[in-house]
Figure 1: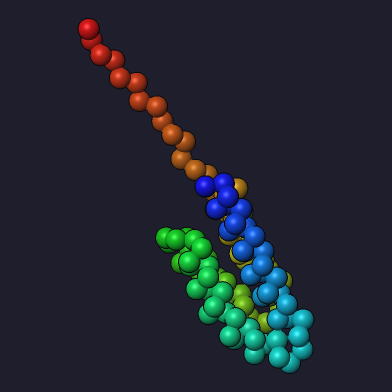
Figure 2: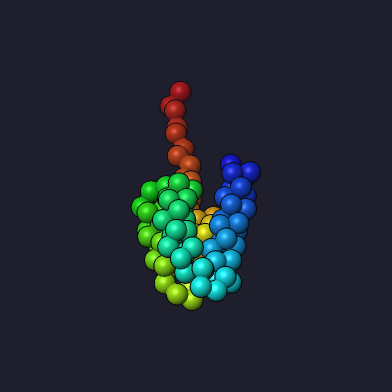
Length: 100
């Protein structure tokens, strides 16, 4: 699980860097964003399952299409949300007594 967790972080950082790189290319950059946005959305939904993954997928799609928002590291933020900020339910121990 721990390796998978950091694999997602590495992939996310790479995807964020690719998304940011399109902003650095004048004239061609916005065209590349049109191609990159659906790909990034698909990758996000593949990386993070469930409702949260779907919401993040829509957010990364919109973020890639809007001008000057490419600097937002959406994949990395989603990783932090999933593995650092999100509160996980604490496991509860059930004690069972057996009468002898």
